[in-house]
Image (cartoon, rainbow, N blue to C red; front, side, top):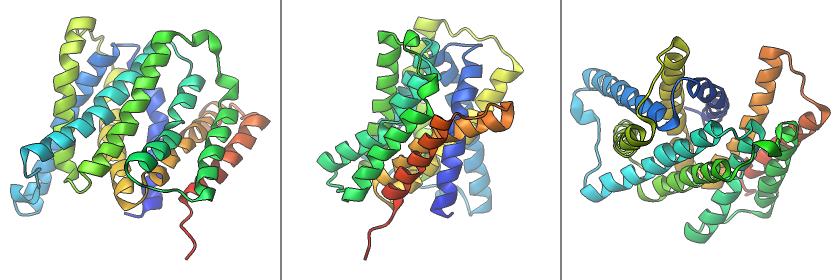
Length: 295
């Protein structure tokens, strides 16, 4: 599949995921919600595997990690991307952190990725790519400026968002470094199982596994499992396989842009002039990061 299509799919689903999560957290607490997601996710991946095995010549077409160490690498990456990332970001919303501050904190991922990849993975960005990283972040500040509400800031909420940011950044880089070519079906199953093993006891102990079942909750689970946890996360992994980690994660900058455009399309909320300027700067920054080197 073309990388451009994967990028836009990831951006659209990742942006919509914040709204779906906000709906779901009205009916259950974060760790409980994530545990439900991973149970449903494992069921979906099992059906996916069964379909592939039936149509592609048996279960041997699904390649599992060859050694216990390889299994561990996949599980560790999954704990970062799924359990720690989503646990942190969901709890930041649960604690009432505004959408603008949450988006701004998570939008620092490309910058954090660039710094870590330079120091530990020897990925070197060109000067215009560094400029693109800075421009992208500056553009996001302008896009979400009208949603920045300092009154929603609390130490637990900021800590949760920061933990989520570190989780997805380190988890994605760990996957790129130690499990770059793993079968995506096998990795999804392993990572969902590892995340469930960690989060389900926390949900039971701290949240009592309380759930108010409703159709909006079921819809959010289905959308976030199939659209985000399986398809969007695997799109991110594929993009990181194909190029620099920073280039792949720079698309995170576009999620607030998509959110503003969605508000306009769905609710008639016209973006401010400052937001439009920010969207233009953000797109220019992403273009600089993604532009291939001159030969």
